Image 1 (spheres, protein in one colour):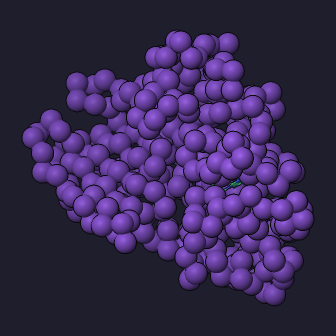
Image 2 (cartoon, protein in one colour):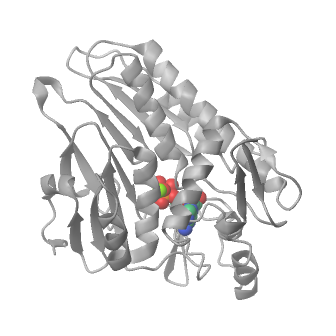
Length: 335
Ligand code: ADP
Ligand code: MG
C-alpha cells in the first residue's frame, strides 16, 4: 500500500527547463528505477524503456508467481520449461558466471534466499539444520539448459532459480539499446544503483558517478568517477539486511556456508560496457573476496573495478579505475 502510493507519487514526468533532463522514475524490478534523458523531451522513449523493464520483471522476478523463473522453480525435478529468449539468455549467462566463479555466483541460490527472507517481512536467522538442508539444494550444475528447445530444468525437487544478481544488469543493457535505437545521445539509466551512462553531458564532459559509502546513509559517497557509455554496478551488504543479536545479516549469500557472504569486502563496483556482465561480476567478486576477486577480474577484458574492504582499503583494477577520485580520505585510503 505504502509502496503503491510511493509509486504513484514517483511516476512523475517532469517537463523541465532546457538544460535539465527529462526524468521519469518508477518502482520496478524490486527497486526505484530512474531514467534521465538529456536533450529534447522524449516521453514516448521513456515510456518504451519502462515498458521493457516491466516485461523483464514479469518474466524474471522470483517474487512473482507467474513469472517464467517461478515456473521453472515450481517444475524443479518434474519437467523442463520453455522460456522466452530474454530469460533463456539471462539464465545462460548466469550459468556461465557460476562456472567461471566455481559457484561464488550461483543462480540456484533461491532455497537459501527464501529461507533467509532478507529484504522481506519474513527475514529471520534460520537454524543450522534449515541452512544445511537449503544449502544442499543449491548447485548450478543441476541447472540444465537446452538451447534447441529453449528450455530450462532444475534437476532436483526443491531447487529454485533466482536472477536477482543479474537481471537488473540485463535490464540496463536493454534500456540502453532502446535509447540508442531512438537516437538518444545523452542519458543516465539508474536501476537502483545499477547505472548506465549514455554519451556525455552538455558541453562534452563525461558523467561523474558517485560510489555509495557503505558505512554512511544513502547519498553519501566515498568517491566518484567519470564514465562514458559504460555501466557501473555496485554490490554491497548495506542495501538489504537485518540485525539480530548485534550481528548484521545481508542479502548476498555464500552457498559454501549458507550464510551471508563474509569475504572481507564491504563494497564492489564494476565498470564495463556490458551491464549484465558488470552485475554478475559485482556479486561474484563480493562473494569471492579481494584476492580471488582481483584474480578473476584480471581475466576480464575491458572491465574495471573498485573494491573496498572492511578496513577501509580501496583496491583499483582495470583502465577505467584511473578516473577514480577518493572523496572521503578519513575513512578510506587507496592501497
Ligand atoms: P542488488 O540486488 O542489491 O543490486 P546484487 O546484484 O549483488 O545486489 O544481487 C543480490 C541478489 O542476488 C540477492 O538479493 C539474491 O536475490 C541474489 N543472490 C544472493 N546471493 C547470490 C549469489 N551468491 N549468487 C547469485 N545470486 C545471489
Ligand atoms: Mg549483481
